[in-house]
Picture 1 (cartoon, each protein chain N blue to C red):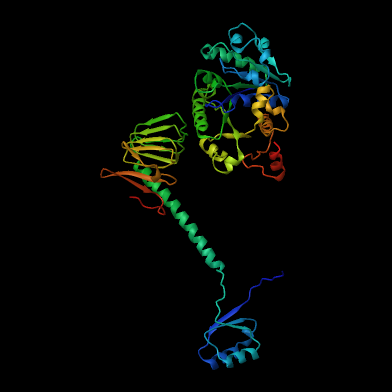
Picture 2 (picture 1 turned 180 degrees about the vertical axis):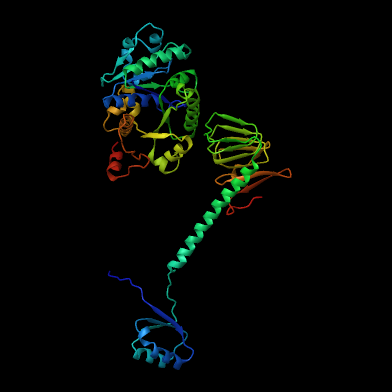
Length: 209
Length: 270
């Protein structure tokens, strides 16, 4: 099989006044002589004869497939990019907002908490590394962990923010937090009016609160 | 002055001793002098895997107690002159070890050999602690399964807190060997892949060893699998040894199954 692919120009119109239509093509003939004329609506024999005499190619009442223009694609891409940037900014501002709430007796750590280690912190903790399976992190104050938690967490503060895997065991104020709310997304766990409220930080996620 | 490498795993049965035997021989094949020391006191195995069980006259404990000199206790490998072996005691238990004696022994070995490879016992008891105490580097052997990873994680934690180098404010170099990888299980997601493991342990990868039935037979015969040119595990150990000797060897991806027609046909006749 032999085939060719090429783009053509299409002039799309509908006829309201036949004389006006013919006059328009008489004037603009040079402009449209290489175009495919697509006419919507019924056309009379006079128009058909006129178009044939001018040797113009025409189609009647057909929906031509239209590709999306590059501009539209670019617009969509830019939109997506902006969305993800917004998400990133939200995560950042959330982090900043919460770390501003950290304050009394803050400990900042960048150590990996490996299996078997028990980290006990008086006051608040900002941990910038993983908590591996078999490790335990205990705080009396608030807690933020920026990387994946697979071990055990005991937090007694007003809030904590973390991402946990299904292996993790997270206990907030003596209540076990269901892992499925914390898996694969950065979430904020807070104590509000004696209720534990879990809010995912990204707005795209379902708001459980 | 050589380097002391402790081979550790945390969990037992992941292939530590096999790794020690093969890497020791591999390093020796790269023209470096090497001594492998079995630190698994009371449960020595390395002598069998190296095929030297009938040569053991003096063991490490006797050397430490001053009943024999290091020179008397060292056993030269039958297959490579660069490799020597120091046996563990089979009758004593690990309570006979203490830091001073261990230090004296490894220091003496370090002065004579390029590579001193210590085979750590499984677990994280005192025997393990003495193995890592004076190590310059550690090779962590894991299997791609969660229990092995967690135990290794624990062992790394202890290494990072109890070794002499860390106490001196330096860092112990840590290298990961992932052993017994079954390619099609990794592909189907039943087995952890190396990226996940590296994520959890966050140490440098030095090699991946595929599962190979030949390893057990090689151990039983006392001929480390690295001597078998057709063994995939042997080739993997060869690459790791070359990397340990400072050569740049490209990482081979053993996590994709070789499904060429030829291997399939070969599989039928196996």
